[in-house]
Image (tube, rainbow, N blue to C red; front, top):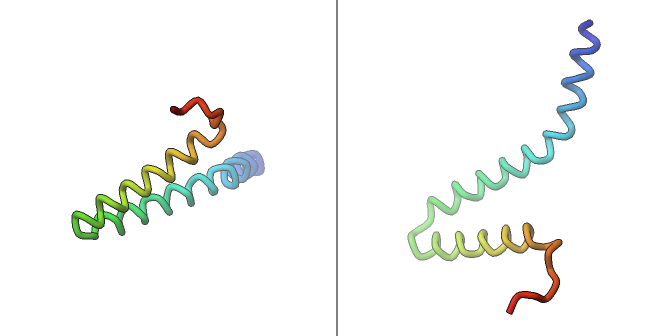
Length: 66
């Protein structure tokens, strides 16, 4: 029965590892941004927003913007 438990945790590990590392990278980047002066922080948040928006809308590009 312990083999079944090991198999279940093995299946969830690789799938959750990649999003986990992306989340960790994002949190690390946010910490760096938060430590910057206000003007630099605003620019960094704008850049991050643009990158995330581009990533999220990447499959939706159809030329309907504007």
